[in-house]
Length: 92
Image 1 (tube, rainbow, N blue to C red):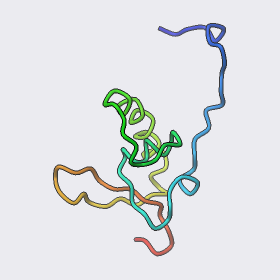
Image 2: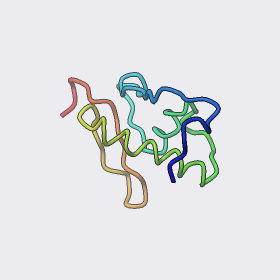
Image 3: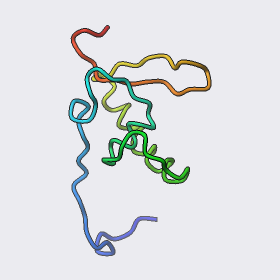
């Protein structure tokens, strides 16, 4: 159910990092690590499952939106997540 803006104490700009601002150009990240980085957390930070789910709600659309600036790599196994990285001139 929508709520009036007046019910909130504060409103903030909906600014997200650009891939080049968030990711190192020589590293690959899981969507879980990207989710943490988008919240200024360490990529290895321990999170409760519910918190991680909320962060993924932000990270997955971010990856899709910025897909033309990213490369993807196969996961090491079927049980592991895929990896995403910043597309550079050296990449396919």
